[in-house]
Image (cartoon, rainbow, N blue to C red; front, side, top):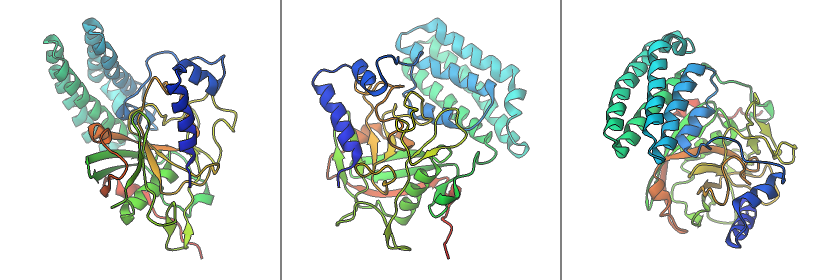
Length: 367
């Protein structure tokens, strides 16, 4: 069965090969009057995951934004703005730590305080790297601090932020985050799945990983600057047949829009007349993980998934042809060089949940 990500992406690719510009692709998708969003688009999966966390703490977001901005400034070797970003982050961590800690539950405050202390130490190392204009160490030290920022932000999430519709209680749900390590015949991949933004889609994937469903399956499709797809079981079935019901497990399209309190189900953003709005989890990072689905069946996804090989000239960040049409449920955080090597016929040797399994909520049994 042909999956609809193939037809849409094939269309994009044909346009790209015939010389249609990214701007025209954008216009075809959202209308000639639309414009790219202002500022620098976020194209790093880890950064997108940090911003996707359901928290409301302005100081920690300002620390994050300052450190994220270093990447842009470093590309242009703009040392003064880099120093300004570091100073801003340092001042906030020093003078507004109480406001950061105000969003952390009492039981987790010691852990948060330790993270802030370590970030202050790391900032000193980052300054040294900037003074030496050592780009490699700047990237390294910045990444270490941002990882701690993400850990700090995760401590601020006190409960799952909304109720998933009861009609999906028969499906596994991920009420939080999970990390999956996937061993392939070309090397290892590490994925972080975001159940805060896509609990049903991510929960389905985690459940299948736990069942060993993906172990031994081949990558059925791999095209440069395009997609890498897997999850098609051997035989005539194109998805997961639940042994408890004997039926194909269909997963609804699930998209959380920025500013919304809960995801939309069963309808694309285009169909909902919201094609200019942005999903919390966009297709704008190399290794974006999304659920494939059968042609024309919005709620027909099951086990097949794909990694999107982000190509900014083909699908500009912020106005991506795929946003709102497919359910993104995570990002690759390690193994980019491995994903680049995967070809059709390569295998998923094993997949394992290494963190966050306790966030998986099993389906409710029906009488």
